[in-house]
Amino acid sequence: MGTACRAAIGCRIRALVALAALVVVGAVLAAEAHVVQIVARDGHFTPPNLEVPAGVRIKITISNEGKEPMEFESLPLKIEKVLAPGATSSVVINKLKPGQYPFWDEFHPDTSKGFIIAR
Image: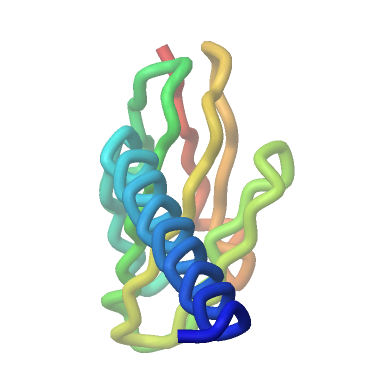
C-alpha cells in the first residue's frame, strides 16, 4: 500500500471519528434540554403559560391542531416558528434567567398570548 493511499485512509478514519464525536455531543446536548409541549388551536394555546427551570436549555414542542396556520413568536427570545395546520415542530431556547418571557401567535395576537416562566 502506497503512502498516498495510507494518508487517504487515515484522513477518512479521522473524519469518521470526528463525525461520530459530533453525533455523540449532539445527543448529549439534546438530552440535557428540558422538554415542554404546547398546542395551538385556532388562536389559543394550551397550556397558555409554560413553567420551565431557569438555567437549563429548553426545547418547546409546538403542535398546530387548528384549521389555520400559526406563528409561535417571542421578540425577547428572538423566536419565530410558522406551522401549517396539523404540523408539529420544536424550538430550542438557551438557558434562561429567572423571569417571564412573553410569546404569542402572530396570526392571532389578540387571543393567543402567554408566558414562558423560568424559575
